[in-house]
Length: 635
Image (cartoon, rainbow, N blue to C red; front, side, top):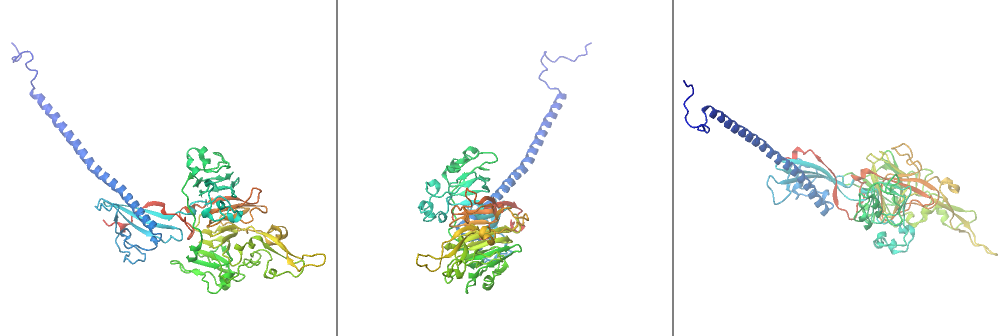
């Protein structure tokens, strides 16, 4: 008996058939595959939707900061069209409209909603970029900066930056010169290319001048800050920690990454060390377009602060006061105190006090200026008599014994008088606008002179180099380090074999150092005062000037730089700008070694009303992002 079922076909008849049990399994696989695909599609869609939103928000986030920067650029363009734009509120500028406490004629108050300007005037959709800004111009005069807070808005996303904008000036550098040759007023040159007929017809060294007295940086000269010159630098051992910028076309050949090329920014005859402890440059020098100083200090006549006349002496005290002697300021009718639009009227002393032996002790005119102009024409221009400029007992200026009585003809032998040779120069005559400064300054002030500023002793800051105190020294002619050299004039007769002439004053003779030899009683100058930052004289031998210096027509120099013994170190902690080079020493050891240090605070601020470049533009100084104020968010 067979137990097998019937055969329904040939050997291969059943290979293409599906049994009922196999069909069920296949259906499970199909359904499972469709389910997996559905889950994957759902996941992709779930990821894509927020990713698209994230991408949109990232784009808006980036666009908002770009719009904020566009606001800064917009404000800068307005400032560069109108230098006084920050001093008033422009009611027609929609980007400015908003919450404000600044007095204005627009009707804007602390309740005014922020208005906006589009980045692109052709696109004013909600997804486009807009900006709104507010401005604080209160530090424009005191620090030379305007603060702008600019908010960008894109599609409901806000970002805000706060920036300071300012005009470039000499305080951007430790050291600036227009010409690297000696001041023609000092060299006595008659050559036009050397400045005999003024700076406008003088030549730079790279333009081919010759026959001028050239001043070099010498071994021992260290400049710790950026240097700029429109001329070519001559250096024999000098070191420049932060490099130099020069308008000398030779600097265009410098390759920053190849130190062996850096000497292309030095003139022929310079020494150069590419590396090591005596390396000439701490970083690569570079070419830059020329920049120029204004040509006089007349602007200071209109600025707020204390205005004095004729030879004036100012000694700063560490308690935020200053003692001032200014005899010519006692002339009737002179206005001594000029009010600030925001800071009130300073106390500058009375004419009676200023002319007294004790001087006038008054508060420092902080955030203002001290300006010394020439005395009225009614005041005679003549050599100042001894002690007539004033000062503390035993430190009165000028030095010597020259007096009104010695201006007349002597009456006998053995008569004599002495005087400081600097005071015989016509530009130092009484009646001219010269100021003699020293002391410990507490406050922010710029001292300017129609003629010269003479530093008679250490000029240091009460709060030290990192405090809030700041000083500017601006002179139309020169800023000078006092180095008195005295001479003696004796009575004499001219005699023949039969008679003698009447008594006359002879020629000056016996020139010598104040505080030494026959002039020992005159004391040692400049006078020293301890630096509050160290509690000691700093430097131990020499002089410190913690100030930004600017000489608009001439130079920064040491009086009688070629005479007498070495004076030690001249430390300037601030900045120096001069039309021409002024000498501080000679190779025979006289004068001072230079130690010039840049005050890093000058990157962000300047002394009050300090002159900027004559060809400068408003530009960004620094910026940072801040939290957007809630009242700005209007959508």
